[in-house]
Length: 178
Image 1 (tube, one colour):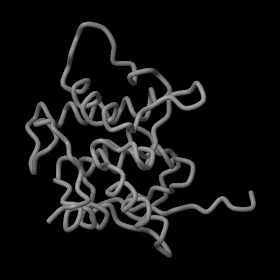
Image 2 (cartoon, helix red, strand yellow):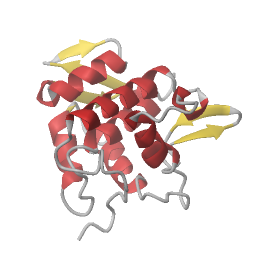
Image 3 (tube, one colour):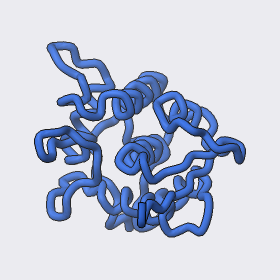
């Protein structure tokens, strides 16, 4: 039924509706994605285990999305053949949907595109997958809020997407020849 769906074993995020603790953890994890991309473990260290660290470990680290490349930590799609959580198909769908459009793509259309077959991404996980693509391709994305260009694609902009996805659209920016 969902042969290309992510296999995420974390009850905080793998659900249709988030708990308040899950929503707060997803928000703090998204902030870390934007603000501490190049830090090992996105800056989550020590003996404390807040819910956002659990999400980080079970989705981003285990899913090979946050990894070291050439001595620097990056956010990117898992490598082909090294995708233990099967995140890559849904992430590619998001990227291809944005890149393949002749213009802007609404965030709600992106979520709809990965919620059905063959991906079956649950509503609580979809924004985190979108955040991964927005961070991985941040220099090729233009964000629009209610039709107006947002010059900064950062954690604060993403928090607004979480609250009102229907107000946002994204456009791929071609950089060829630059």
